[in-house]
Image (cartoon, rainbow, N blue to C red; front, side):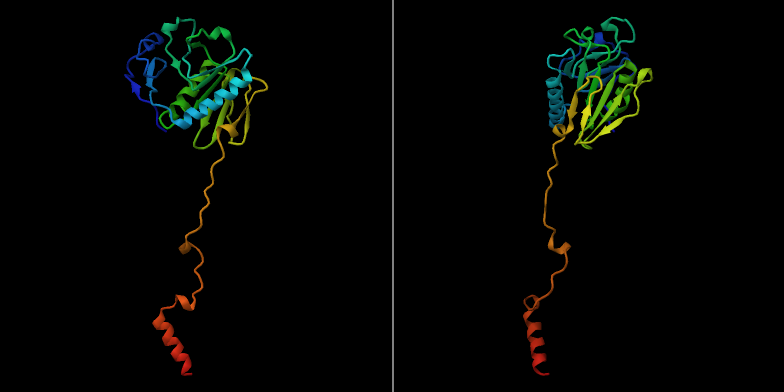
Length: 231
């Protein structure tokens, strides 16, 4: 699995640095280390994100929990000021139920639910590095969506010991969201049925046809008939 490019690993950055970087670039900070996340997501990635957001927003409309697509999430170690925070991530989707964590610009503290849609450029970063970050920060539920394998891996927090063993859901499943009782995500809308292409097998791969007189060369056919007449 590949991962995003690192920037100057010997340099430590903060959210204060992050805020003055070009707005058309996308970066994440993990313990002060910067990772370039600027690769544009594929169209399939964007469609999946839109479908997930639509299902969650429909259920949560009028409730205290809110859905965010690619928000800035800062994860302080303690009570340090925003500008001093050294871990800043941008998950594909986050659900936050605590109004105190939202100020209109960013989310401060662990979201209740985080969803990452895997892509070739960031799969290792999402599956390994960011999973550990989310677990340490206190995220209650973490999803990894696998577009190619058409499955969703779900990690759920079990007490103070971090995430328990993952659960796996295929394309026909409805996934319960433990942090929002009553909410289920229909994966059949996320992974539409695959189109089955039916083709006839080439003739040479099937059973050879039984030869007929019409298939035999004319000279050989005439010789065989003459031989029969002399008998």
